Length: 195
Image 1 (tube, one colour):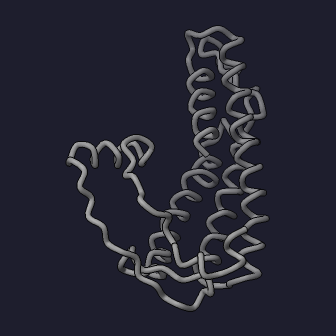
Image 2 (tube, helix red, strand yellow):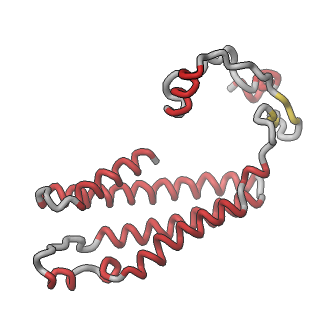
Image 3 (cartoon, helix red, strand yellow):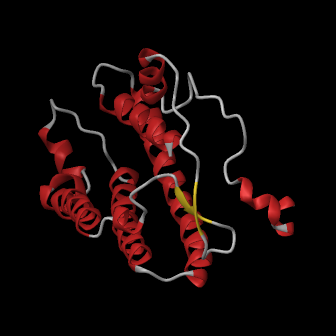
């Protein structure tokens, strides 16, 4: 998804800059459409994986996830249609506004298919937050059998405060805490886990 966001940001920046050349603006439009196409592909892959998970366990978080992805899919289709049409606006020629797609000319499309959908999506995750299905203590997890509840060890983090902060700010990419052993060591007792 980082690739989608990066392409989308570059595309919008290139396409919306009136001082750049026409070819750069077209490149921006193509980058935005590419980002939307990749996002649609990710959604299709997600639906496939969710169907596999759905066969194994049906619960409220999955239903919330399905509704959320449906809302995002509607928004993504709207944005694809919005960016695939004529998006060129010449401010010195008011007649060029009439050549724009109605999706770009009228704001209610944006409010309905962009703002309202994302507001509903945010409200959905706030009302049916999946965090209530997780254990309060992050050391608790299920064993391989899916029934037995295990509790991991609590090892203190002896790193300096600045290193911990840098690790958090870089999402653990930099200054990662060294693990002495693999998590979920109990999997060694199950023959299927050694594949």
